[in-house]
Length: 191
Image (cartoon, rainbow, N blue to C red; front, top):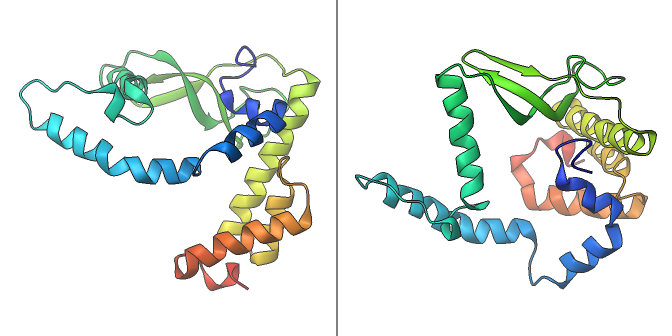
């Protein structure tokens, strides 16, 4: 899949049973893992920032050192106007044929001092395109619900996700999320 677009997330759609089984076997969710470890990441960054010569420990960095290296490479390309090529998230602007220009896509692009340019990608094979279109619509519906929708719009957005597919599942997920977020989300999304 990575030859088509730079996203490893396709594993959740093409190997759904295996991924669900693996995730259910874990003692806690990925989100809970991140919340548990995030404070130690920040502690490590603060400790190293105070040193004359910082040395980052991959075991104490989210995503290992590779995400940090990636961030530094992007900053370098911006500061030094290098125009280096990266996997980016940016408005499509014609880079992926057949998708709306304002759709944010994960694709290849170049980054310079005051610009980000997507690189035209080949047309996606039909079996991949359908999935990407469905995920794009899910994201659009989710954004619309967040900006101006209500509870029903949020549930409809969840229903459009390829891994949800059932109304009772979407309602249960939405109600749990809204219950946990409480006053952090607008009243219109809780009704």
